Length: 452
Ligand code: TRP
Image 1 (cartoon, rainbow, N blue to C red):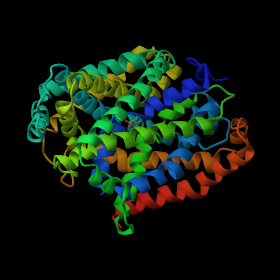
Image 2: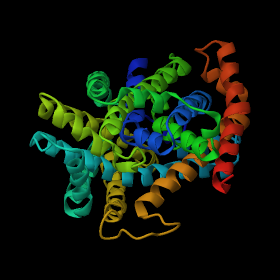
Image 3: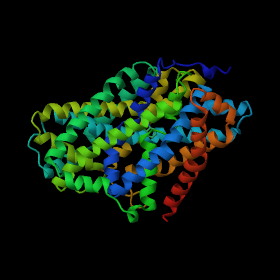
Image 4: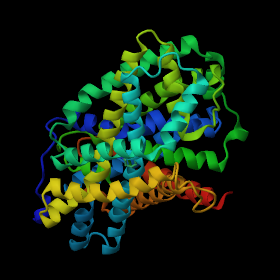
């Protein structure tokens, strides 16, 4: 057996995997990205397509990724090498985990800047800066944060250090304990804020915006945005879930666990939408504002809420923790690989990766102020990284990974892996992946690129 099989640890119960995977899935993608992408893509039609994408693309690909991770129980790069040594697949497939690892690395370098914004807002929340805020002062507060790189640099650095320290430990240790507390706390807090936001905000417009749709709103751009957000939000297509799958206990049903993860992820995203949009409409914030949307509307809620300082502090603290539990899954692939292949201590491997992430992150945060120039197609560096990862690398990673699982890994090997679920369920998943998810991803991605 290759040395790469030696593991850091195995999740001690199925729930621990569910918590850890949900911890990776639930993050800034749900609270920061989902609302603004929904806003930019017209609401209802996007939400409908997004739910379909979660079900028909996200879930089958998530199951594929986790199952493959459990089959070989190693990091993704060694897994593919191992499969090719055993002549099961061609060695060229090793590009898949490499694309995955690079995508994770690139996502982390801007993710940590956005997590830095959450830190900066946590500090403002604790100091009571949201009290009596108006919509224009909330907009100014955010613009001031972006205009001044030194504060962003501080929080970006703090975040990278935290990620490095956490990933440097074994992932199975401690993580599930944190997420077990985080998820319920996040759902309860978001639920309470949604009730409050709905009561002071514009509920009618929100319901109309989020849940009404017409066919002509379903364009290729909307569908591509929905697929890519579904992949981003579930953390699939870049080997993070693969790595967590490697730590799963043999007895558990992968399909059931993954369905729960998708449910939790959608719930948190919907709750964030219900927190943010009633205020966006009531205070006439631009729905298409983009990345600033969450950071401009949330302070308004807290500023008007009795005990707002307290709730704001709790909320941003939870957001920072949620970002951290997602971020660690982005580094896990390379860290596990460096550790298992080259025997580099995990902390050292995490540190090496952290330094690289930090440098790219600095370029990202400068692109909001001093270096706010267009690189290509009128996009600045942050927008280029975001688009390249979300619209190109993630879909390609997910497509290749799914093709590998559906068409190249022997059917019997997968079935053996999925032994804990009913055969009919297995066939369902396999056929959906093969005949729906893969063709849909390929068509949507290519059509989105050529701008049909
Ligand atoms: N899913 C996380 C979120 O919603 C982000 C994330 C974590 C991610 N790991 C990932 C995105 C891997 C893409 C790939 O915030």
